[in-house]
Length: 231
Image (cartoon, rainbow, N blue to C red):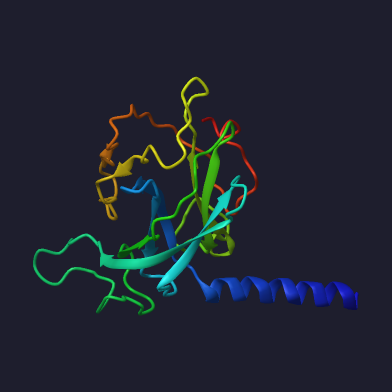
């Protein structure tokens, strides 16, 4: 009985710790571009719910799965922008507060901050027969999620897959193909009961063909292959 009580108390403490530590992640993107010397420049975009716990890191790391020698890619914060919708024409709109860094806690519902991180150029070579997976994970999701049970205890994982050239081609030795990018900022607020349409305006600088599909949402990286995700 004492052991069960201690376990229960530890479990409750862990939930409270998670809830007080961070409840702010809304989504994001991982993309990359080739530089003039064949290096990769990675970009991480993270959207933060300003009504949750503040989170403001000047640097972070991307995890690289599948590379023979490099496991982490450091990224540095280059911009923080309040992208909250202006919903009040008669006066000040809801916003994330004074900033950047917009690090204050407890902004109004619907207020969103966009953080953009970039890496220095890094030489990686190219993937072989199996893709590389670039991952960013953090805790936790916003408390306003209505379709998840206790979202403030769930992490958030972004991932991108980088494929190598077809086997029939003479494989390059450095970055040869940039990823697509999303040019449109997300819609952060919509009117209840009204239809809302959004276009991410995806663009590929190498003029590659693009298609879209929905992938499973994951809290932490569980080793799913792109084929298990429907890619």
